[in-house]
Image 1 (spheres, rainbow, N blue to C red):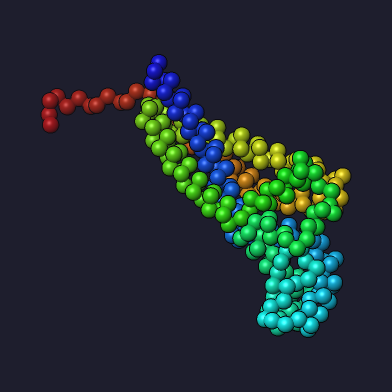
Image 2: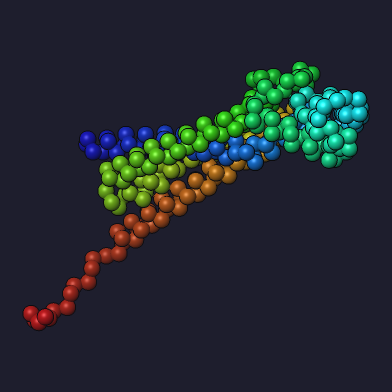
Length: 271
């Protein structure tokens, strides 16, 4: 009785630990430098409506490059402070200027967080409720930073070690023929609710699109694409848990139906 109770306690703690580990792992992936800057790049393009304002920025930038002094020029009419070498500021235009602005803005946001929105606040002109799907996306963008990525890395390592220790305890507590089933079951118990939550969040973002304005729709589309990272990971873990549990169950079933071993032949005492 005591042994059975300890098995359930260890299994429950392992499920909690794995759930937190999987969440930290997804956060670590989403906030990685390449992925994080790509997310911020798209968010800046949406928030600033850069394709509409780019011609005015280009004219103002070239004027500032001609009139000012010094080695660099602050890009005017752009909400995130971006400084360009004066030689580039005189010649950059069109798609090249757009790419440079988005790349520099994404880098600033990833390094410094949402405080990089310094010279202006375009969100003040956009109707986005904090308690809404679009508000959740905008709040989540504030977590996509280099410092958050480091925190997720530490959490992933610590939770991974804790999960490994609990897994070893669980394997030691259960009988040998139930070990694979136990591992598969706790993996499923941790992955399935997380998968359901990620799918539900993606669905919430989709249902928020039809009646939203263009800005909110684009912001929700960003959230929809980002949730795919979590869905992909949780789906992989769910399939892994099913494979482990199914394989272990099939082996146990085969062993239970294999039948008694054949008797050894009579040798009349001969060696």
